Image 1 (cartoon, rainbow, N blue to C red):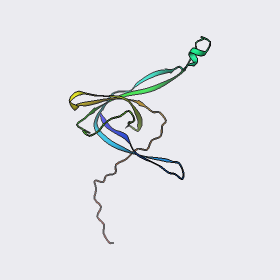
Image 2: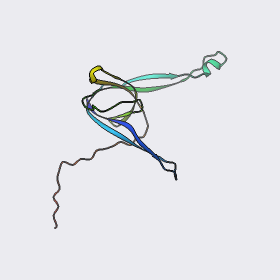
Image 3: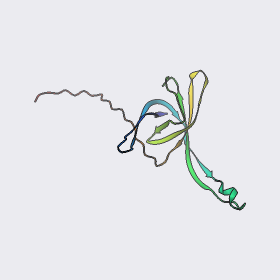
Image 4: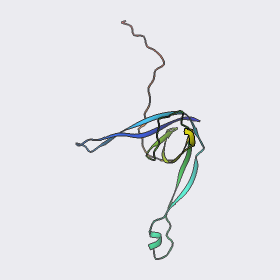
Length: 138
């Protein structure tokens, strides 16, 4: 269990002078999400070159990807609607939502996400102060 930050794409603006796109994502903090252990699996990519290489077998590329399952209680965020464009930040790692299932009676979301290794992201930090500062004129 641990805090999980779920991000959704918000409004985006493009500067006409520079062409730079600025995205304003919205973040929802989920304090009671259950995070299951990561599963590292090897994936194989093969293209049409396998067929067109004179019937000889051509190897594709392989890579390791980390898949993680998140269990989210819908009572923690009742107005939240998930989509495949969302992403999760957990322990300073970004996970792209690959698929999600919703249990009946608005009980639970089961989210399967893949870690995006090496991708930079702008994390939103909520600033709060629990101490009060008393100002004086001296």
